[in-house]
Length: 376
Image 1: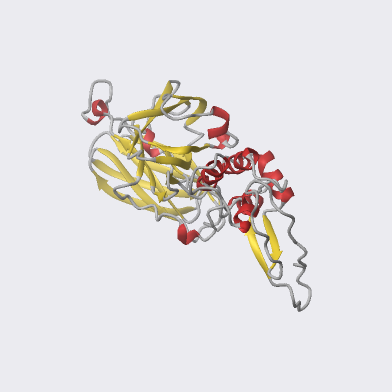
Image 2: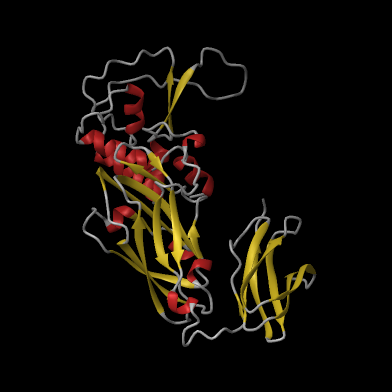
């Protein structure tokens, strides 16, 4: 499946639509869908009924399940209904009355009498306009997932526990977790709480885990509240390359799946991933002697700009060069730095796409890695 098809299916959909259908199916007062066009949107598999299959189909599309995406595409990502069609009164909110879809969208010449309503399949909450999304800013009611930062050692198995704060009356959330697959390899995932219902297959998407993308999509019929610090799930990785901190190679991938949470009343909330410092490492504990480290650039691959991190064992002058495969130097950054961690934003907006080499030279040695510059 191409990226264009995946994006076409997901536009306007999020986990709030799943929660809305779930609430509708159990007839929670005030949540039963009685608007004809919203019922058309809820009938994701075009069966003429609204059922748990429709909620599951949206969830699996959000998790990037290729079979679900194909199903959604085959049954129609949009339903086009002539404006001349008079929608019938909703008698049974779980069975749709027949409706017209006889619209000619072939644009080969001027057309008339083709006025229609476009219904995005699955968009029960009518959120296809991106302006309706939370702005992602950190606010008092933002749902926060926390993980402990740590220095990674090659060959070790690392278990990352994700705990929550501000999990107040939450009925749904979604996000895509991105990690660097050249640094860590996914091993397994497990849930850590019985306070909210989890389904390992239904709530986590591992379809793109080999390229470092793991999705989490969770919803429930009723909102739940968890104590701050409650651990909800654990992901275990095998470390392939040591010397980097977890926070430098793991982040939320908004482009893959916008992060958002919903309350029981289906009000949107922001969602953030926060890394807490490891107290032992932060204090320079035993066994954490600084050494020269060149970290993998983030993001990678990238378009235009990327950030290169490095760690110096002592204060010194360091030079970072970006080189193409022919040996031509594209950028040089040189400065005096203190001991510890630093980062440089590399602007390569005018460079040709492809594989590039970045090289750090210091009095304590030299290190180099590859980066991938993509077309705009």
